[in-house]
Length: 273
Image: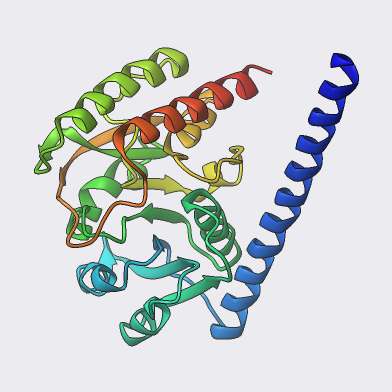
């Protein structure tokens, strides 16, 4: 009795996973189509600032205002991938002259980033800088973050609140940053101090090489996959600000920690295979 029941459960789980994978592919395709409809003649500058946004209409405008027009003499373009929601974010993005792609459903930051990475490669970007939509990153720090990539010294540069300034007050989240950095460094053979920071500068060739599958908490996946493929990683100090307004979409600390650990373990096992 147990074996047939277990087989049935596993079969049902596999079917649910297959249906979800099909849904994800559909949403990503519709996101790319939405971008093509909004920007039929799009051509990005060499540097693309990529922002994913889910219900961040109150914060996204201030972030867009801070994005520089050029970095080291290179033109900067901005793309916001709206990860579902109906709070009017797309209209705010258009009002600031930035490009936009809207996903028809909320699928997670990892999915929205993958759509952005694909659009970056398809429309001429050579370097991608990911910036949070909630005001926790300072886009004026782009030149310093990009410098090692532009100089040919690194392929992926991660901002570090531990080397810089952390103006938030969550002691448990800070402890988690230290703990998971130690774990990821051990598995990846790196010496980074902040492996969960979403403020990153990335060479486009790296993004076309790594394997990205996670729907959420994907910073560790990017680092582990890049390190396993021999890309050069570095970090730069950054200032980490409290959210401008609203609540984090990452969940409470315990949930975030469990999910982040799950991503780390799955990615490490996948890269070993």
